[in-house]
Length: 238
Image 1 (cartoon, rainbow, N blue to C red):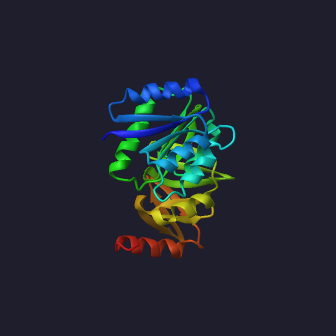
Image 2 (image 1 turned 90 degrees about the vertical axis):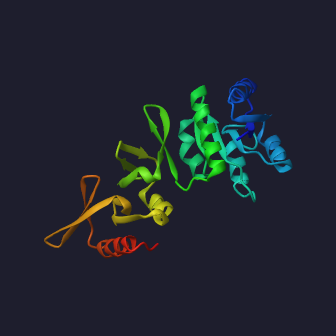
Image 3 (image 1 turned 30 degrees about the vertical axis):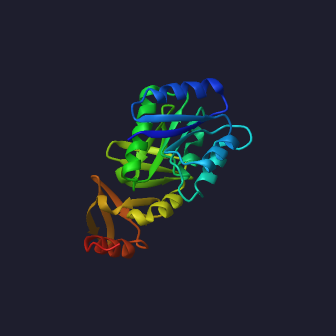
């Protein structure tokens, strides 16, 4: 598939470098540039693009502001954020960004973003992603890889088969965001993916679930809802 991309950045050297690297990708047919959010919005009102590579920190209409406007378009283009500020990753993915690249952008990382766009054009992804920071590098954790979530104050720890990741989101936000994807609160500090529940254990009236080899306690308050949801899941109901 030949992609038509819009690249937006107020720094000309960055804009030129991104344009050069994107044009080297055989999947990219056209790269149009804009040096402000206002100019980009005008271009986007005139025609559609397969994706927008968008700087976050721009004077006037910022990247986050522009992405919020694009989210209200009848056909919203996929957005890839490009920034030097990793701390904005959570806000970026709240706007359903396809990817989040940190400056200076490596060519192989840029190609990965193009792959996400090209695959998404053929089949829009149903899975959610969360940006996590590890050793100064922002990475993506896919919701379907998360087995359970553990509350840690105003933060949450996502547990996957590969390890755990601390994110700057309260567990209540993830509970609401992922409820329709089969995640259920089993304790004030625990949210589990029902598809990863291996078994239920009962001992002296106390209930626990086994998830990824970990035994997690279920509070008495949440036990009835857990039983009902597991029954519905096994019957193939929503």
